[in-house]
Length: 179
Image 1 (tube, rainbow, N blue to C red):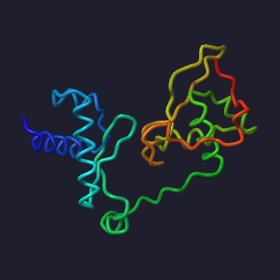
Image 2: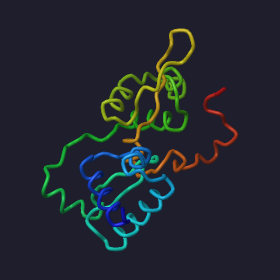
Image 3: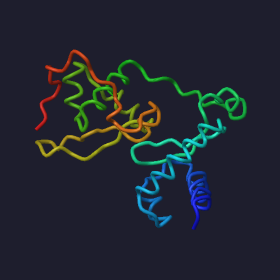
Image 4: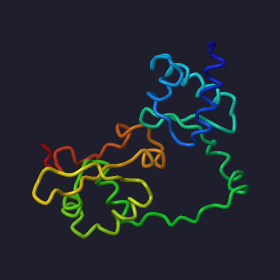
């Protein structure tokens, strides 16, 4: 199989999926190693960018997704009726930041940091798919652990959690003691 055929297959897979596809899945489907696949994906991403195509391939947490370019949003918006999603409240944003920087984290840990109940914010974040349950803490009551999702990374334009901005001035301060 030549490189053009591989690129065409990747385009078809990403288009048909509509969601991000993990590099492992692409590697299995195409029967090529991940390093070669990453090289091909980077080449395709560069091509779409250089040619200023209407679509682009983005990488999110070792997954690739085909999507439209953000600079054409106003044109695409005219085609599809925009979903009038209400923005996140300050409480939800604070809760999301606590989860992002301290994950996995329990509801009581979040409430300890915020100083108020966070049930409503957690429910909103779960409904939006920005966070998910990661399991349960091995402690009395077996509290639920929360973490961010790939949707969180996509919404905030991050490839991975390592791209989260550093919290300056809090280096000496430990928000949560983790073992």
